[in-house]
Image (tube, rainbow, N blue to C red):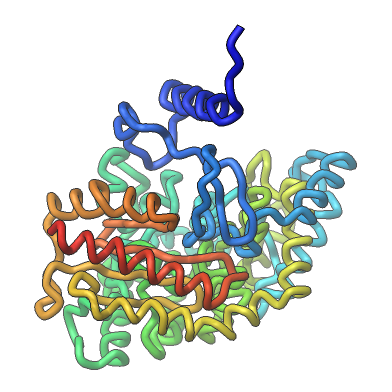
Length: 465
């Protein structure tokens, strides 16, 4: 009988897991063929801002999982809260019943949300929250005697989720084509990518007015009597962190009010500290009618999402026999709600919002060092949420064609960044960008590590091109 050394045994175990993954695990948004002759990356552990693969290699988590792990990995207290709640009450639905964790979390979110956003409808994720908001907007207008108002306006290249309704609101053509026909009634307006502004490229405020006016033009073109809501992310993720120009969100609010259209702030990424405030609407000083949120609410320790609704929009649903015929089996799950409460306690105890505000300028300044590279065209974002746009020619802002983008991002950069010890995202939903959103616990040491790895990989990418 032969004896296998621990290292050999570990290697054999990793190979067996990879083989099982290739055979049975359908990974999300993944070309399964990419692993026909390559091992599947398997992450087994997290600690602070770092993750570790099945072979023991450490990586800096530059994306907080998927814009999720605000408080960092390995928070034992959050795991212990989940275990305590599961041992007391692991599950019960919110269908005409309530549980203490869901009640307390709804109360907490209502207190944190801006203005009169006091009603909380729980889901299990962000896409479901967006789906909920559209359905709620349509029924609201039926209840108040305006049944023709059902359409939505969102922005080009914006991502709002994968359910059929949320995917219709999404503005990424390639994400939608395989699933068409989708839900009718979703129409698009300009986004706030100032780097590629088609108008007013020398005046940020004028560009913001132009982009906001594009939303009004879409409403008027469709007919205000047919439009129910405008959906927008305060900082648009897809395309690479498009921030709102000064006055833009306030102008959109005025447009919505003028046409009796609801404004939905999709903060699935931007809420819970990503920009240094609990909600992005607080940072940018505008009042939405609904906020959709998810990801950072539990720092990823258990899945949950929510649509937070103003008293004005909720009021008809509280009268007589009216109700919202919509819900999810696991919406407001008691374990997830308990973890979310503990996560918000941790936010306060460690002042994670203050940490972002204290270091956000340093994060930007460190990333902007990369502007000396010929391949880096723009660095944009806010808080701990940034995109770095890659270009073929800085002077003309010429981007890469489809074949070049394929070779650059999937053929080289994604693997090279991960191999160098940085987990982040190389994305081409729009022009090619590298996206960064580290845990809210990090500081200058992690910023420097991110910049160093990016500099090495981007320099090699340029040399290959």
